[in-house]
Length: 452
Image (cartoon, rainbow, N blue to C red; front, side):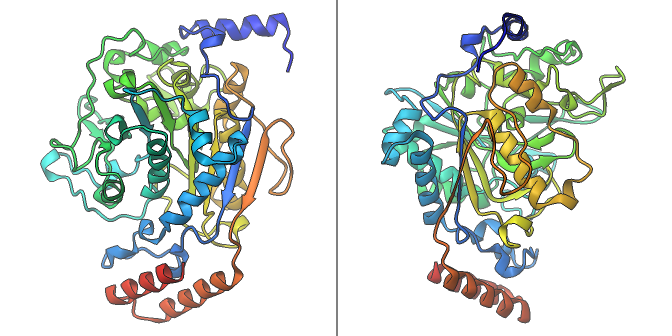
């Protein structure tokens, strides 16, 4: 795509404002340009057999218990090969992550709702085993990502996993609420990969492990919006953790969601969790300036600025979007039926390297399948900004079957086994008619796993 000299200078000025030149914007990726691969397997999860009903008295009904890890592994490998054009997933991962001995990898997961359900105000009161039904990261896509890294020679202990941010308290900003990895997710990760560094979890001695001491010249993210960049707490709130600074490779693992303020929660907004605090980014009127929330902006959007930091965008090798359950907002959105997936969970993984293209596809998927949930949500203006400064392609398609014109979008359907799908429906009806005791739930899980 050709651009005029005026447009080139405009983009360069925008990047210079955050301390980057055009050739520093993104790591040069070996993936197909602007390609987003969606792999769908309707047998990846089966939470719909309990009709999406979570019961506090039966903690086994946590939706993450209804996911088939082996199928998610296969979905991930299929998407990897399609993304790079390789015929073998290890080759594809090596192409995406040029790993050298001694280097560290950081995986940014999305645990935004855990700070409400797990945290109780003090470290010694954390209920790591809390069961709640808000859509958060699940273990299976994380494990698939770790597995792909280990297969190319990355030692487990060189892989860090976390959602590092600390939500500032009100009215006291110094009282911070961490985003935690609850045991229901952590145990599955550690069972498969016991040596990975799982921060902000019960597997770290003090329940945290993330540190904020680096003197790196890019440790404090610069923002083009002066209201954000000049805030009093910027030295602490805009800081990247040492673990991200130390990593040579960064993998972004968002969840397929929309957002009532920002328009979409995807690869770009997932990075809000990489800095110490994103307070004011979501405010309808922020910092007393009478300005509409920063995430609404199509110019100087903070999500774009974080990606432009060289420790984020330049290190990002892969975006792995968890679309197994997905959601319609950052919180208060338990797994539900999706219109375009036959009334079941979406059961998808989406892989790519272009953040604007990835988030465009996420935006369309949620809008098409959950229209009543998101009808009053704003457009994703951050994607307009991201495309303008050169962070990929932004486009909205006209419907679920419509093609994209500028995004190289691929859909791959796997294992459309109608007999097994009918069996899942039979089990759902059977469970719905029962008393829903813990034993009935355990028996149901056993039948599903034996079948799949």
